[in-house]
Image 1 (cartoon, rainbow, N blue to C red):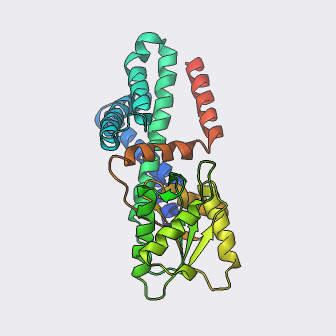
Image 2 (spheres, rainbow, N blue to C red):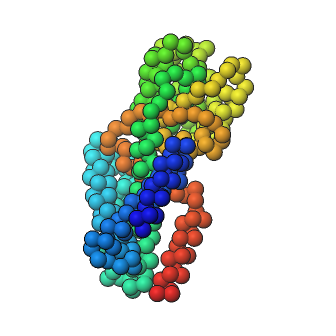
Length: 317
């Protein structure tokens, strides 16, 4: 197990240095931690391999309870801050649901079903830890100081025509980076027009940047995209059509969103680095959990395969 832990850690470091956008990196770090935990339990606590696995599968319940507590606290802060109880009950619903499941699954279900539930919770815990590790690595990665193009990713609008506080923070961050450079980069504002919006997000962002003092001829609008993947895809198409030598590209978004956005740059073949702007503390947990769900939802076959594996394993046991 120690050898597996060391090998997994070496692979994690190697692939991270090669491309820190790859979601595989965080999972390798998470599994290296897992292997080291098993090694410690077997060597210092006289546990068998099987006992170590069962212990680790059960312990994520404690981790999830702590996450639930944080989610519930932040949800209460969110509701108090925005003074709108209907704005966002996401964390409350998830928190209460998981709390009920953890406290009552042993009383309601048989031993085999209980084990399946614990193994599924274990899957989410390990993948979430991997996602967190990957995010931290990407946030801490040293960034360049000069860019040819800065892409600002859109978000929803207020009253269908004004940028939100979240989107304004992205634009202000882009302006800060812009001001720090002697040779001014082009800024691509990326975001289409939603069904409930009067103008495109790109148009609203352009107007906001003009108010911040950016020259109009330095702003390029990409107003067709409807999601992050299309933000990157259509922005790349614009860059490829520019009659300029563009090799240093950055995109600006919120810290909770930067890893998934970076993942999409890899998917579309765009060599770009993410610059994150801060998010209000009470808004971060909900948004970060949603990013995690959006990532794992892109790999349904892995999750279905894991659930089938759990069912078969419990049936054999």
